[in-house]
Image (cartoon, rainbow, N blue to C red):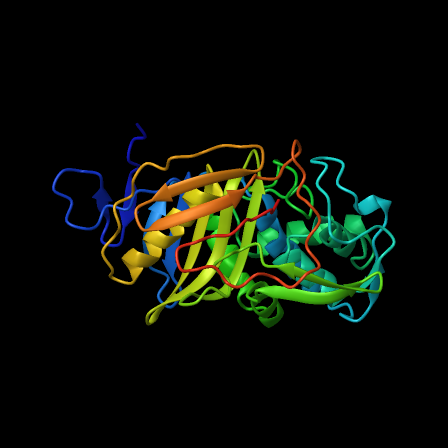
Length: 328
């Protein structure tokens, strides 16, 4: 039986202690932080200062560094063999040899978490990849990220680490870039790759879901990091920055998001039953009363994700359902 985590809520009340006077939110994520965007008040925290791998949450930092260089968004960049992932052996929707505008590659990196697109952006940084690495370090210092280390631009390396506290700073900084907010909060990117129509769905299933106002987001997954999510969300009259790191499965991360949103909205929390997982070669399923999540197998070195579909995306899922996410 999983022990209940210790959660710090507004008012410095420790949940889990006897006689707690506020709702008990049980989180599967190893690290979490929820901050009121307007006041900076920490509303919920779980191990927020501990550094851990952040996977593709790295791409928010990469996008800021690329945009800071003020290179033309219309410049066409070529995907080459140098952009192939040889660390986790993930695949990408952007084939080697394809040329796309810098702005489109940024969209694919933020919406579809495309690693080749991200690699190409860093390679084509002004003065090259070494200059990009130096600019990344300057960005880390400028944002005051005390527990952050970035080795490469995609998040495939487990050496890319940060704390939830640092990632909340990253999220707040990223929100000051209108392009990042706009691109990352769109459900689908439609473009042309190698002369063919191409559509990539946002890896964050909450984007575009009825009743959910996601203003900026990025997901992440590698085995060492678990399931991660960083997003700015409007709940009622309040805007919050939410960071979740290290969830064991996407289904449990989805439960964390939903329960936090219920709590922020003043709604009664559904009983969080212990998820019952049915494993197969292609899917994992977690169920609880009134909510069901079906999730495709987590991608990683052992199981690279399939190529993105070029067909019309399916209709938005019903509230409380998170469709398959194949994000690294």
